Image (tube, rainbow, N blue to C red; front, side, top):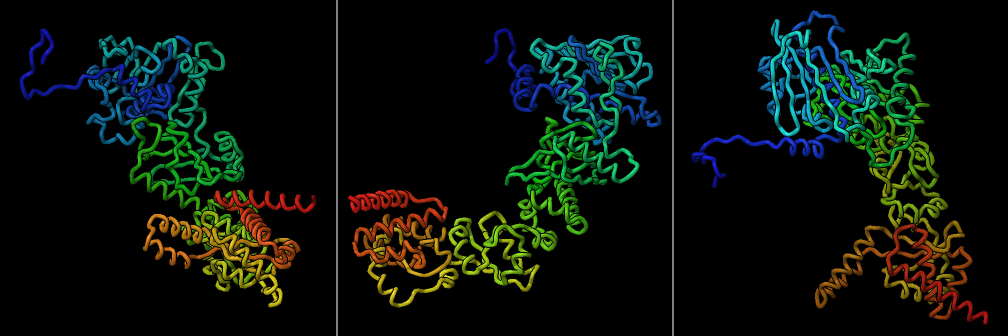
Length: 618
């Protein structure tokens, strides 16, 4: 079907895509660029790349011979450069063809790695703030080249005309935007100046700003007056260290615990890593400030460092990292992977130096970032050997290092969960057992590697049998006297697959200890569900197997006055209620999540005991 008045295309005819420029600009604004402010970065990037190309033509020119000049007075935004410029053919090829970049031209293809941008769509970002883009350019490649004017409009139309060389006496390019009324937020003079400093403070070419007033933003105000702090010379190592720390504080807003210089000559990367002075929540990663050839690429580049390095924030400038199409993140390739590995090695080396020569710094670092070091030590034998003895762990002796703990306890027991540690900590400590909380991330695995560093130490998992073996049994007469009560208690708690035993242990203030594990509870729950689902013969078989599943154990403390009174109760209902109350109290002290049936039991036993007390008093 063809439109009226048009001739049909012969079968097999090649056709060109039709591009709706307004739709494309809307796509860029919502899905490629994070904010309209990137228009200035794109213009500055194009200008710097043009200067780079000019430098290849005139390598002997003075370092400050070519530069970029910005102008914004509220009515226009103008970016002018002394770069390589464009011919009329270049204008038709590169400004009027979406996606084609002059940096892909054959004549400079071999230098494309010298350019920040590679994608040829940056100029379209100007349509985020203006309806028309005016470009005036003159090529430095051709002597006596005329000036070329290009006007592109948001509706997809453009015009090109050739002007006398006098229209632009020197080679280079000027891009002028007349901002839309709704773009004032991004095109006011103060904002343009701030954005220019934000994106271009580390650019190697001189960049100046003029707001037309002759004041602080007057002609010649430098956007990048000094080179990067790591590229400057300092009279002493101490002054250099202080300058880098001050720069890190200016960029990130915190005073670094220390600064680590980063230098990877193979990819032209330089910068600093600032060690955060406070603990970072587990799993939280900070973004890093990454410049490519001086131009700010991203303030949230997480991919530059491995996940375990969340104790630092970096600001780096690199030559050989590839930006994505939006130029707001890094392209994941072999080069980036190699850079990430090399930077990780620099951080390891810093930790090693602190461990060897600055124990005060190491102590402050580990106090804030022991979790990050633990995650590294799990996979890094060198860090493990250096720092495992110094890392803090939660133990029955309080928060202490493994080195100190192993001196006191030849056998180190480690729990598999936080709740298990909380169940047994007080009793294990009173019994003289050395127990480490292995429930936190990395801790159990690291404690088990202690013998690699301290061969005289023995590490074993804590299990209920180990703990109960250290609890003293009661004498036979006491056991027989309590037998009836223990039978009532076992019957009352059978629904929780819980056995009941009577022992003596310290502290005497603890009436009962609930010994259970997450694995045992999971196995009992699985068996119960299987039994309910199967029924019949299979249900009976599974029920028999269920009896062999690990059971919880409520250990009553004969040293506790309340327990000594409870075991003498001869009233069956009151005995059952008291056993349920003791179970509920021990379950709450374990700090594990309560099952609905346990919550119901705690409420019921409390009310029953209250009712019994009121009846007794009445």
